[in-house]
Structures are given as C-alpha cells and as structure tokens.
Length: 255
Image (cartoon, rainbow, N blue to C red):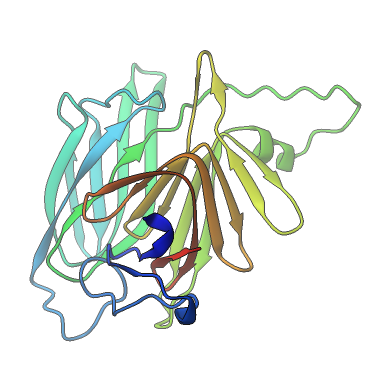
C-alpha cells in the first residue's frame, strides 16, 4: 500500500518506519539525485515517455529537447506521443514543443533533473491548454498581477536546496491557484466538458492530480483527486490522496 511506503525521486521504494521520520531509506544512487565523484561520467542512460495535450490526447510529432553540460539532443514523438533517446550522465532540462498552425506553439518545460547511474528513466509531460483568461471584477476590486497568477493558467517554480549545495526545482503547472496563510492550493481549469489537471515535476518524479497543496516552509506536497504518480523507473501508481516531503532531490512518502 502507498501509505506504508516511501518513494523518493530516484525510484527507490522502502517500508515506512515511524521512527525514521522524514528520512529516506537507503542512499540514492540508482537513478536520479545527488552526484558522486566516483561515478563514471562516460556512461549513459535511456529516457522515454509520452507527451500529451491537456485533454489526454497524444501529441504526435512533438519535438522533445534535452539540454545540459555541453549536450543538446532532440527527438520527435511518434503517432501515439511516445519518444525515447539516450543521454550521458549529468543534469538536464527537458523542453517539449508542438506547433499548432502559425499562431500557437504548445510548450512544456521541465526543471533540471539529474541522473548519475545507468538507468531507464521515464518522463511524461502534458502541455498547458493556453486557454484564454479574461478577468472581470464584479465588486469594484482593482485587478492585480497576483489576480492573474491566481485565476489564470500558469506554472510556479520553487527552489529546494540539497546537502551538496545543488538546488532542485519543484514545478507546479496549474489552472487556478488559491494562496492562504500556510499553503498554496492548486486546481485544474474547466474547459468545455473537460478539466485540466495539476502537473507536478521534481527531479525525475512526476505527479498529476485534480488538487495539489504545497507548504513551501515545510516543503510538504499533498495531492488528491485521481492522483497519478509516475516513478522514474516507468511504473505508475494510482490513488485518491498522497503526501510527500521534498528534500535533497527525494520525495519521501508521509503517512
């Protein structure tokens, strides 16, 4: 069961121990996380995934580009939105692009992720909808830039430092957001008969859900409503609610 386990951004899973607190069991050397000088930089890893539009349809022919440490490589998705390529060990960003005529290009950008050991890494992505957002004040309130951030589709980025002074970034792509004193709540956006989803990316770890809450001070992420967790090793878990503590490139499952 998910509530009895820890899952970190390296794809390691271990039994949850109440005495361990927020500590992740084991050392992250299998897939993604902090680098060690003894690892051979000449080795490589395979990365693959699916690129979709907000309504879950495949993005055929999308360009997926990985850049980092003197390396840049681009591939295109097939008719089902699948892509795959190989890269050397290191830190990379991922950008997916899909033109729609001459007026619009769908773009998804994933924050830097790090791979330090031979692995088979899965990275899926969903394009934002780019739906129009015309705010109208009905109570005389003067609309601000913060109103635009809260009620229009966007992406929030948070820096999460590590013990080795390497900062991982948490990316939350949302439809609407609602800040309160301790947390920011994120929701999808209703479009026609469908609704966009909240998309979370942290190192090699990905979560999609109807609702996400993030406490920046405690670095605790809570997801609920048709939650899909994509582990770096390509496995997918489905649940209705889940909580993680984010630290050092690891997502530690909380009870």
